[in-house]
Image (tube, rainbow, N blue to C red; front, top):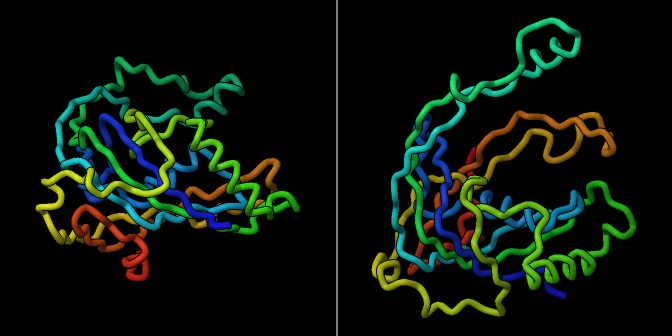
Length: 242
């Protein structure tokens, strides 16, 4: 049995943040594979499987819009929380009226992508049942058909949910916008492929019941081309760089 799927994903907005932009958020023109893997994990994920994006098809014209949002610039301090529990230390609360700041973001709007992906077994936290590829295949297929998920799938940031995900037998390439076809072969330059955590998904304490994971990570880059709207991720995966 094949382990691959093809889906259509649509949304009103998307923000695939360029890591080189430090203050204002600016989206890539197209989604990085890692962002789409995260979207799929919102539908179904187990340590025993790993998603791999094979192909990305950009159906709609690449259009941007600018928005300005109020954001909280600080994070809750774990040290202050522990101090408060011991009746000492600073107030751990964040008061948004005092910590609010405005940031501009350049978003993609009216996006529609065809995504071809497959999964493979990792061997992590495996039981006899977890090693059954057919089981995972059927669960993913059923969730995609029913539109089920355990966390709202999003395009890059949680503020921009995926409006529709549809499982398809094949892609209708006639739906690719003429503006995209007219672009021909586009060198997208070096862009983020995914963020890889140092622990590679394995708890540092080897305890799956009470896991401790590393927060150290590095971004892996690749240099894809979009040819008539199609990004063959497999073709450019071999040229990934840290």
